[in-house]
Amino acid sequence: MPVNFPAAAPALSEARRALAVYAHPADVDVGCAGTIAGRVEEGAEDTYLRVTRGDPGGSGPTSY
Image 1 (cartoon, rainbow, N blue to C red):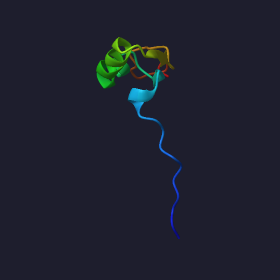
Image 2 (image 1 turned 135 degrees about the horizontal axis):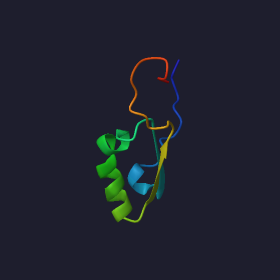
Image 3 (image 1 turned 180 degrees about the vertical axis):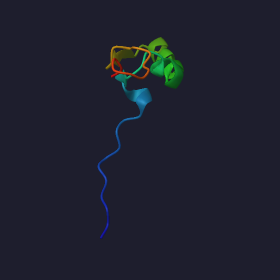
Image 4 (image 1 turned 90 degrees about the horizontal axis):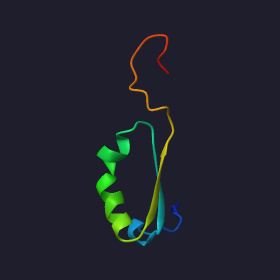
């Protein structure tokens, strides 16, 4: 039985807006900051969304 995949999403270079979702403050810096900076220079509107409090973490009863 053949598998039919949906049409591919447009290339990121064609997208004019993007949302970077991450869990820790340095994740975007380490993972894709250069790509986002280049896109912004080309006129794209990119937004960061951090989904945690940004605590450094650890162990114990106060860790989440």
